[in-house]
Image 1 (spheres, rainbow, N blue to C red):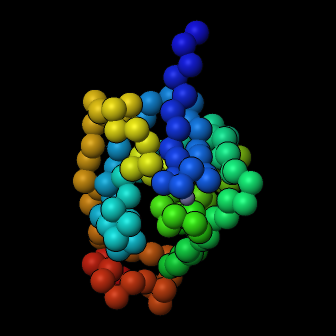
Image 2: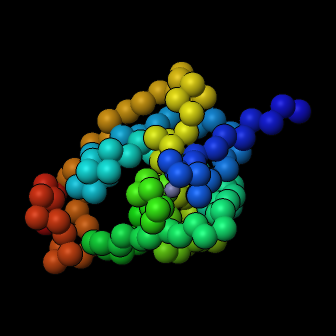
Length: 140
Ligand SMILES: [Zn+2]
């Protein structure tokens, strides 16, 4: 069978996420953090990915708001690699989702994948209002 795996690799090549198949959709989330990163996410289950770290590779994390996910980027080149859930299982015991940054993929490999501008989180309140961003547009 043809290997359909895709790679999302940071600019310096230190950190690679290996995904099992082409995503059905790419989401350019417009929340206060993703729009700043200009990230374009594809979503998979945490158990579907292999994260390959070269020797000396280091991830830094940014965690804010409800602190349910971390944004992980390469300490060397600064590329945003993926966001990752703090809880890798859902309440049903299934593998949780994570988001990989398709900006680090070969554009030709995802040329025909649908893209959407994700406004879902613009009005979605955080659980903890006191941790919300000053530009959060949600109603609390
Ligand atoms: Zn890097």
